[in-house]
Image (cartoon, rainbow, N blue to C red; front, side, top):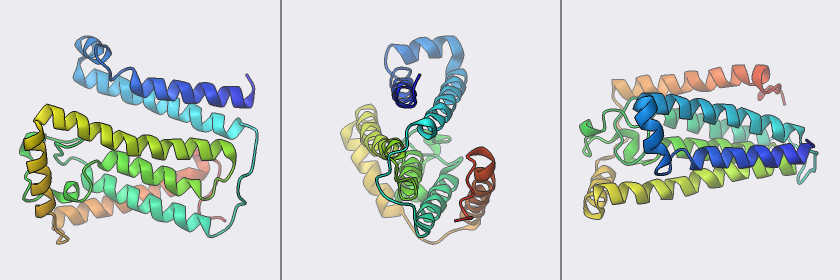
Length: 222
């Protein structure tokens, strides 16, 4: 399989692996046999495996430069990754009835929504930031398609999740809860928020440390 053939195949499998398992009747069928936790673990493992293959395939694709590499581009990537890590950390183990990945959603308090008051879909938002931030220093065709596609995938995913949650909750209830969460957002962090911010910075530091070992490039070296 040539470089482009592998990249196209990996991209196709990536899209299919995210679209098919969550569609009815596939998801109910798998959930009935694996359980909700089993389905989540299997789906996550499949997603990570296919993502790794896609990233490797992009690196093997023929190099077609669209714009040159420059030192300033690293600052864009690091800034985007800092924002993504902080969003993920602030959303971790907190209720979020608007998106997926929420923790004890029945306990959600629209008067104290946390990050949800600012970002309804923290995981897709972090994915969009990760992808858009990596576009700047990766100006070859394969990586532009890779990261540009991820950013578009995340942004479209937010709209799809909004539509699904609106149908599930009812349009009136969804709009009411969304407005209440917006009204309840604040910039006054408490001790728990501070701990989440520290965890986000630790996550960023860990990813910077792992990057040269996993990807082969040091994000601080350019």
